[in-house]
Length: 551
Image (cartoon, rainbow, N blue to C red; front, side, top):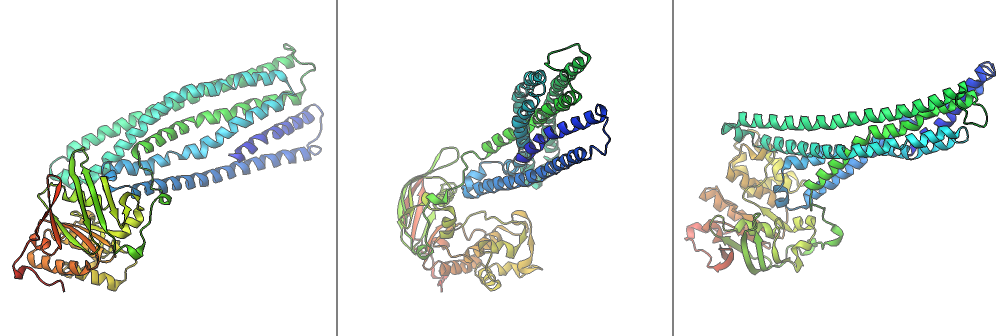
């Protein structure tokens, strides 16, 4: 912001030297050799101004990139620090569009509008002060005509800001629409919705085009009107100077010298140039304000967690932490109470099962225990309220495997190593063996290096569950939360997986949501969730053949 101002201020001595050189040549009849030092000074000032302009662009771009990177990092931290239910309630396309497109929309504001604003605030005033000793009438013309530009700019800005806000919202909607449809492309194709969705995408694109052209129309219209005001100002100064030379206007105490007249004429366009530049980039300000409004709308109440205000869980005691629930209630997104008034205490190293019919709220309760869903009441881990524990520390203390574990496009090994990126190849093999991943991976051409599609394309539901269990075995959480860990497994594989799971669970607190009696029978206690209430029930008894030693 400072470099363009310095460059603009150097215009004053540059114009004065040029006017003096022309007077010396025309009036003083001096040779160019006698003007060598004046011309050298003039050339030096021009080169310095070019260097300042070039440097200002480089510094502005670098500063803008740092600012945008910092903002994107903050927004990404917001996403990571929010519970998955918050992310699930928003369009992933709109969130990514806010972090990419809307943050990028700040570029013009940072690199062009802010430097132009500094120039417009200081340079015209400095030029007017420099011209005042030369001719007070020209200064008066500057003071009358120059303010018309920012006044009109503000009037146009109201319409431009509204148009930019609509354009940003339309762009966000189109980005979200495209990302969501891309994710469900296979499903849309299978159900014959391809043509209908293509038509809908075309309508959304056309709406964005119209709004973008509306923004462009306002920008071009405002530029044309502002150029008109600037041209009137320059023409007024030129007319006054010309009439003064002809003797038709005499408002000075002494006749106009050639140097004074040329200096005023040279300064006339320059006093409007910063204002014209600011007006030209005023739409960058409107676009930035609209972008910030869209970012705020997408990330509403999504501020990152302040780690200075939360309590950390020590690694030393994370394996021996009581889990205490007191009058805990959890609501569905529609506000319907799913779990009501649940209270129990889970001792360190204890294993419990929660059973119940589908839709009774078992998974919802498990997500609340993992800190993934808001709740009412009190949940404490090791004497600390769950909401007061830092998200990073909570992830160290708790390991969870849900019904639909995330499998991303990559190898099987890559997906397992998501549990611990620093795990050794030997640890990876042991974890895969425990989770019975090798049972199906060894049948594949690439074994653990076999590439999977997005969301685990290429694996069955049971195989995806085993990959998620292998991830868990690479970690060392004190509290293990499992949602149907043996779903989709045959009885023999189920028993093998349970044997490894119970061995892993020694010394760890474990809560398992299940429909399988074979799983519930391995637990210390069992509860049934009925109508939002958690009721104690006997641990199921299985025939000896159905229960194998955890050893």
